[in-house]
Amino acid sequence: MKHFLIGLAMLSVFQVSCSSSQHSKDEDEAIKELSVRKVDIDNMMSDSTLHVLVKVKGNRELQLVENRRYPRNIETTYNLLRDTTGRIVFISEMPYNASSEWFIAYKSYFDENGKLFAFQRQNNFLNNGCTHGAAMENSIGYYNQDFLLVDSLYTITDTYKKPLDKKACKFPYSFKYTINKTLDDYIAAKNIKLAVLEKARESDTTSLQSPGS
Image (cartoon, rainbow, N blue to C red; front, side):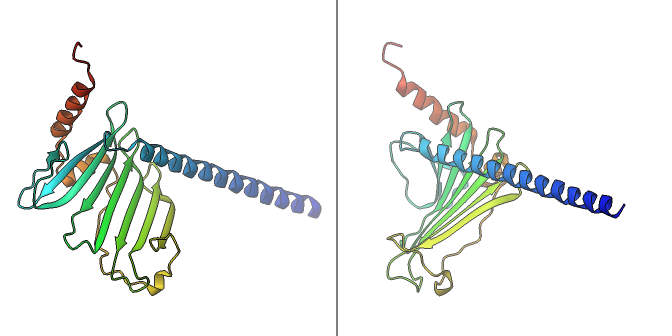
């Protein structure tokens, strides 16, 4: 009887171990898929595929930038990317800094259902106390369908990609920011008008048509 109970205990431990191993493997595959999806979206970006909107001081409505004709008094610039079906899959938010002492980009990546699956924050800044030039801070978070953080990556380097000691750095330009879990939440929070984007999309379609079409 004693040997039987020991055998059951060992079998139970083995089953739990196999279950945990499989769960870990499934998680790793899911994280890898999110990473690949982000890279695919990054590879889609170019001057011709991105739509640019700007927030101008004193005006809540965002303006569409066409032919690189930027207005004055810009507070924030947004870059938006659509996939081949017309869905918005990426939006970056870049606050304007007149002093050029820092550059910050908040990048949101959305899946086919409009749910955020990756968020990246890039902060390149001077006056850091740990290198003579700019410190290059980069953080990426990956999220599952329930908006739970499943993986993250953080690096801080100098302009030559040499790792810096974070504890030795000062962060005078770390501002508060919000991560929106869905595309709808993002559009509402930033007052993005889809009609403006449709106008840009129609303009792009027209420019691709031949004169005889």
